[in-house]
Image (cartoon, helix red, strand yellow):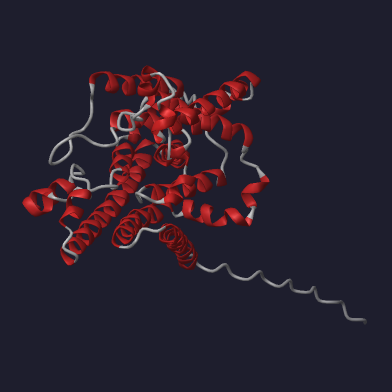
Amino acid sequence: MAFLNISATLPEKGRDLRLDLFRGVANWAIFLDHIPDNVVNWITTRNYGFSDAADLFVFISGYTASFVYARMMLERGFIVGATRLTKRVWQLYVAHIILFVIYIASISYLALRFGDSEMINEFNVAGLVDNATETLRQGLFLRFKPLNLDVLPLYIVLMGLFPPVLWFMLRKPDLTMALSIVLWLTARHYGLNLTAYPAGQWYFNPYAWQVLFVFGAWCAMGGARRSMTVINSPITLWLCIGYLLFALVMTMAGRFPSFGGMFPEWLFSAFNPNDKTNLAPYRFIHFVVIVIMVIRFVPKEWPGLEWKVFDPLIVCGQQSLAVFCVGVFLSFVGHFELSMSSGSLLAQIFVSVAGIAIMTTVAYYISWSKKQDKPLKPPPAKPVAAPTAKAA
């Protein structure tokens, strides 16, 4: 067998509903966060700490990718696992291109229909007016990304480069995690990033954000299990609580200038603005703290995962790709609707609730549709009564 020195510990077989639940949370939060001037997005985590739904989405993507494909590599070989990963990358790419075309077509149509030229600039599609052919070509190479279409290209790149990383993670999980951290810090120090079109760099720097993806894989490959002594330590708990409170204070300082003015400039400017593009260390640490708290207080067997109230989130998490794409488009529709209307509190709530309802309906439909594609199980055969002996 190709794998003779496996050091990683594969997770137990069976679905982990925590992943589906939090992936659903991430999809809903990304939708809400993409609608500016919306009071409802105050319920999302980005307002209360350094990390947000994007961090959660990337982490879970790395966790589930290793969860699914590591076992396949072990049982069927590296080539089979790598080709299945490549197939998934192709599915992601096709989804991105379809969303890309629908997105830019909708923005262009509405801008022309309502004579709103600023919309083209606001959603970063001005290049379509100046040089449509080259802009579309760059979009195929993931270098041109309209507003809010940054997460999926990052996911595509990370998944595309994941086969050799997973191969190495199975053999040397801790070393792989360490090398990922080194790459992240090196990219921050030297300003490494991919270029975007027509100017600038990627909003989510893949050299930096890969550390969250690999961290998810490392947790799945036994990293979290090997760290349970530290995770369950009382000292760790108090440090985590302290850091979460500190992150809350610093985030609120950035949200409210009068409150931020109460802090020394050197302290305020160290955390504001939040460096999302290059994944600031304080942001990564904040997310690690959240992961520790979830592992400690929300075990895989937590009965609450079976509560019906969580079903919509879990189903949205199970159909994550479709829900994410629908959510990105609906966030544009919601933004446009609020900008064209009064933008009242009632309108903000209506747009938010309606969007989440549509995303959830899509998730339930896809889940139902997939079940219909499976062959029906034959009914259990009725037991045949044994013949009774006749009296002579």
